[in-house]
Image 1 (cartoon, rainbow over the protein chains, first blue to last red):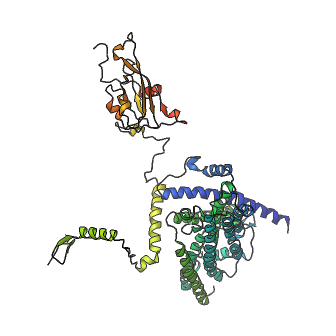
Image 2 (image 1 turned 135 degrees about the horizontal axis):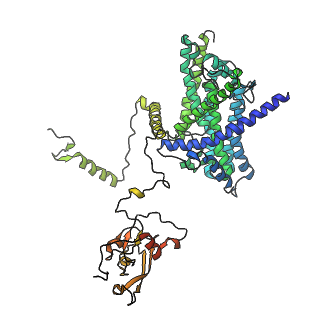
Image 3 (image 1 turned 120 degrees about the vertical axis):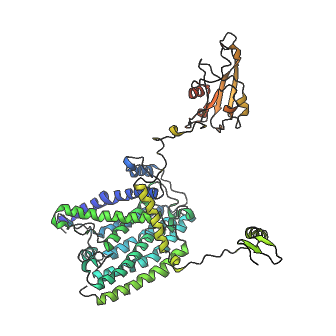
Length: 355
Length: 209
């Protein structure tokens, strides 16, 4: 391992985490409040700084200065462990996502592992432990119910999440996320797989299963990140906040920010798998000059922002599902659709000339 | 036999309006402890699919978002910068206040009518005597203390209505704040400060008369 690799990796980690992801997390909280306000015909937070842009800073100070209260009957070790576990997986997952082409010849991905998507699923499903442990350690009925709900929801939706991406990897041929992006640059984004070769009718036929795949994946990500309409683990009205009922101060903030970090990571995965990652038609990659490398990174995060807006838009439109509806939707609907979808793609691929 | 719409012909030939018929029977049902089964509406396949409803909902919310973003939605005013003050109607009932006349005399003659009429008993007056050497000796009384408890005041305006001297008025001040309960009691000084001078129509205490 040469020192150049170590230094650039460290720079990428620090840069992407502290310059992009963490500010993005705190500003997505602000964006959530503004978007919800606009949807409900209110101005939203507009006092702190110009247009309320310093609101996340004020929020941070508020949360840091609040009393960090530990209830007496909690299991202290797990009670303290849970918030860390909630925040961590979301941030780790971003390591394998290619967030840009190259910058000064350095590939813009922290760890280009050849089991990319497996790594994502393995780590992302750890996110449930934070919630379950929080629910258990709080020693209170509402967090407990929230934890139970979260675990069963995760199990139900992780299945369709995994099955929904298999068509993508059937086409690409390996699990490396950089090659997914490369394939999309050559053959068109997976949301519109016919773009690269539009005279080929099989490519047009491929669009249908890819859109189904995208829809199932998107819904499953909603469920994975505990966003409305699937936010049953923290159902405010039924469970008084669910798993984080007993948490205060910065521990609560870690849950809160962990949810948004998971949302950003989920959006990053969606963008990478279906929207061509950092690619935008007409913009060359980083080998044509560092400015294009920067633009590629900007394109990637702009796409993430757009997906996050959709997350918020859906949240402030749809009411929460009932528990049995959620389970039925997951097991009887999305699971089957995703499963059949794999066979459809496989059948099309059997006749797809030249892949 | 033909009937108009909304009428039901009973077996005995009575004609009852449908609405009263239903009201009657619903009362019977309510009093007989019968369980009423509300039949769920039968959904067609398009409604069961749930997706058109989602799309319609998303369209509504994005419309609101868009209108708000381009400033087409009229929202509530930004309070500390914008205030109602200019657009308050003349009959607005804000904080009650005492006024002085053009000679600088407190117009209140401490008759205590407002104290008696005040529904929440917010007003407390201690009358004092005007010495005979005073220019306004014939007024006889003045309020030595005049306290209005703004925690109790309900802004009904009865004090203003009952006052024979036109000495107490409800002004347009609505921001009445304080850190303690004692702060919220308006003493005579504060009341006169809000009230100011009023050139009124009651001139009976003018010495020229």
